Image (tube, rainbow, N blue to C red):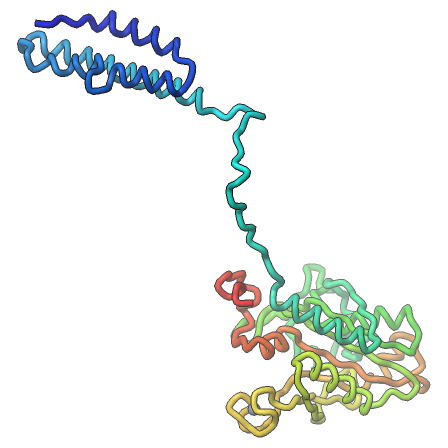
Length: 337
Ligand SMILES: [Zn+2]
């Protein structure tokens, strides 16, 4: 019976592994032990001819040696395949990786478009704080503490009970009129907050665009011309508007603004409930008390103010039926734009 000295085999294996200089050498070592005629392979072939007593011990030792050599080869392989800084190989002919480009949120597109149109009509963009005090959010806008109109909005009050998250961007008008004299032509886009239950058309935050135009002779006719032009440009088709009397404390007279239905063009369809008109915004002639709060002479100056819900505009433009989709961060929704 052929005798095999496993101890000697181990020492030889260590020697040949030590002298292996690259992956090719290593492959040679592997084959010399585990190939068809490799030393370990042959040793395993001997087991079947061994006596029972010898077989158990030999088999165990051989398995240990096999694992030792395998592990040593793996260890050496890891050293050889390790990337050496500066020596990394680069395939300059490989096709480049495509970078995925992001895009603007539909609300951002809407806000930018609205701003662009108003700027073209000579309006200046003005911004203000999202945290306001009662004076700017209510009092200066002719909404005194006991006025029932304060109930129209459920407000996020801050802990001190005096500061709040603005419920509209109208306070920006007050800040602006305190520092600037008429004639004025401004818009104030921005985020506003309402403390209310959410549903498909209400969320706790949304975007408002407040507009204000004040001059010596600014009238409702100017308002209709401006707003009709805005909607026509925004929706990219001829739009008509009509006014209905309404009440907001900071204007007198106040009105609801309807826009001719985008779907049927005013003929009547299911979207406009067969009326041909869609409710779109509130507006009015600035109340004298608002001028007084800003030390502007209401006998000398007059003008209009309006507030547009930008989320609603985006919903109409892109035919979105749930406002909450804007803030959900759901990529299945966002990637459609
Ligand atoms: Zn319609």
